[in-house]
Length: 231
Image (tube, rainbow, N blue to C red):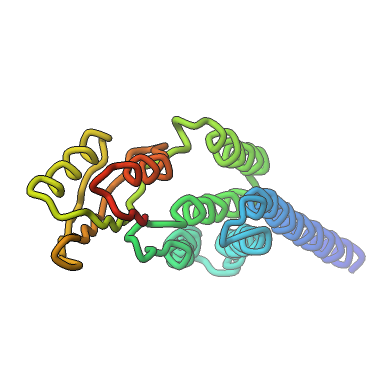
């Protein structure tokens, strides 16, 4: 009888220790997610500390459940829940991405960060402490350092411009050539008459990475045949 009670006591202690470890995994995952979110918050991004912390914590919780929550069943697939985390977080990331009125896309980096944060939580939930910690450091390095390196951080961006020209035979053609010489891609162009002397040219353009649009507007405004520029 004493032996049975001792065995039960040992099993109970073992179970308690396991659950404490699981709770610590979930806690550490939340802290790592918060570290990633803190960097995003400092950049005034849509998803900040709370979002990243909850994503990492939730992913760790689901990973623990996936690995250890069905141990009382003879045949179970430990990867089933984990695989659903990846696809489920994809929907969350899609909600971060949006297209602005000028057709430029925003939120891709934040969405990718949330997806990667879920991976951090999953690895922590699986008990891979070193891997999850190193992954967090790598994500932070890519978010912080790469953002400061101009040739890595700058990306091409799409925008629209509205230019009013004095009516002339080659005015629009010269404008197109000037813009294309700046390595700017013209996606679409719309020309309409304001009156007998003025033309309104609406351009949808793709600027190269790191291009200074303000300088282009200043240069265009100084041209004799340009009445106004807005972009």
